[in-house]
Amino acid sequence: MRLKLSNINIKQTLRRSRSLTLSLILLITILFLGTMASFLTDKDPLKTGYSTGLTPPNSDFLMGTDQLGRDVFSWTIYGVRTALFVSVTSTTLTVLTAVLVGLFAGYFGGKPDQLLMRITDFFLSIPRFILIIFAVIIFGPTLLNIILILSIFSWPSIARIVRAEVFTIKEREYIQASRVIGASNIDIMFNEILPNVIPPMLVASALQMSDAILVEAALSFLGLGDPNVPSWGRMLAIARQAIYAGGWWTLLYPALFITISVLAINLLADGLNDILNPKTIR
Amino acid sequence: MNEAAIFAEDVKKYYTVKVGFRKKAEIKAVDGISLIVREGESHCIVGESGSGKTTVSKLVLGLEPPTSGTLKFFGEDLKEILVDKNKLRAFRKSVQAVFQDPYSSLNPRKTIKEILEKPFKVHQIDYNSSIIESLLQDVGMVPPQAFLDRYVHQISGGQRQRVCIARALALKPKIVTLDEPTAALDVTIKAQILNLLIDLKSKYNLTYVIISHELPLLKGIADKITVMYAGKVIEQGPAKNIFSKPHHPYTIGLLESIPPPDPKTAKEKPLPVMEGEPPSPVNPPPGCRFHTRCPFATDVCRKEEPKLSEVEKEHFTACFHLRNVVQ
Image 1 (cartoon, rainbow over the protein chains, first blue to last red):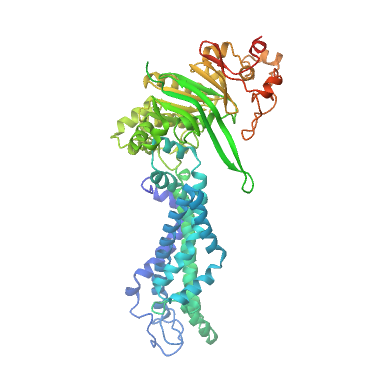
Image 2 (image 1 turned 90 degrees about the horizontal axis):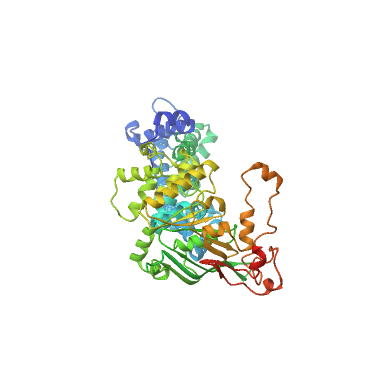
């Protein structure tokens, strides 16, 4: 699978796709804050007692501190790492599984397809978030567990999208033409069908990425996140108490970062769909 | 005597479909056809939609094995070819196809160059850009360099069909099946593509199996014609004979349902219409399958199935009422 980015005029694409431009600006900002976190602040996000009690934003604490004296700015920008790490790794796992299962089921059809689809039905028929909560409680709230559990419970819906696409594509005449040429099943699946599945899958996987950020935040909010990493969701849980004492900054900044990152990723999906569709390349 | 390029004897292809819960039905897509295609010939298979033409092309391409009957390519049985990897590889090289719809027979995510490189890659044959360019040149796409990096949606329907033909020729095949090669094209382009096919046939020493329902277009290219109706052959013979002296009422109907080219005569003489629709392949009528629509049908036709009989040299027809019909 080769994505042809070489024959795309970057300037033109950016001018045409506003969503892509905006998403890149937002993403680059977030990524910059996340990767540069250790240079931007000398404060340990998890360490308490930088100040005595809730402190509003000032020159020393850009986003203030919470009631235990933790620096919200440091927490928020280190939180970028947690959020993106969880979302990127779990989405990669999810999409890889979904593509393999969807391609296999859709291409071969018949019994294997039936079996795989019943498995996805099983996953899809139970509310996912509740399953995830149970699994995290059983296996323990470590970052690795959260990533694995998220992937295990997320691949079925994307696998369905892939399968449905493969079903229609495999009936096209160019697939028959490849078979007449003598191409093997694997060759047809990965070189002829897969490139055509990418656009709908990209949209689905971007949604998956932003969904993963939200689920991780929700888990941390409920106290089921990894306690050893700074997570936006946990800061929101802290804000629940702080807000009564007027500590709006503990709520605003993590919430803002969740919103911006989810928005940026969704816009990216839109933009990528524009670029990768050869019909829009002129 | 050299072996026939394609030899088919009583080939049948049935598909099982589920109808309702636990019930199954058989679709008799091809119900016992025989034909011989000699090397260098253009053999046309004609019939309405649903007559089994496309199934024949799938069988000839070895995409599906026949349910029963013998299908041989240059003396080798398809059943043996399909189980032997090396034979199958050689077979895939020697039998190629051009499909009906040039819009869906090229992958929209590939450039023309990638599409034409594919056959070489699959068969691990060395190629270079000049081979690809000469292929494009042969199918009349000049200058070839202008097309290499284009995507399918950036070229016209006729050009797409040319690319399909180029892809089919890449492996220097012996047999090419053409499944309604001109059905999706404009009238002016149809003629161009047909002429191109005629030229390429002698240049590449090809044997054509042409599947079509457009009889008049085949006049210039066909050597032999097989007329199919509801999975059966009802008339078969040299193209000249069939055009000048068709014997089966269905063939006559097919030939007459073509509008005359002169608009004056077209207005004076209303087009004879063949009533009715072809029968369902799940449950074909007993006796002659055409009797439901045939103006000459009698009791015999409803009970017994007519066999192919030789009416002239190498010209076969399956009908009980040949004398009446010809008059």
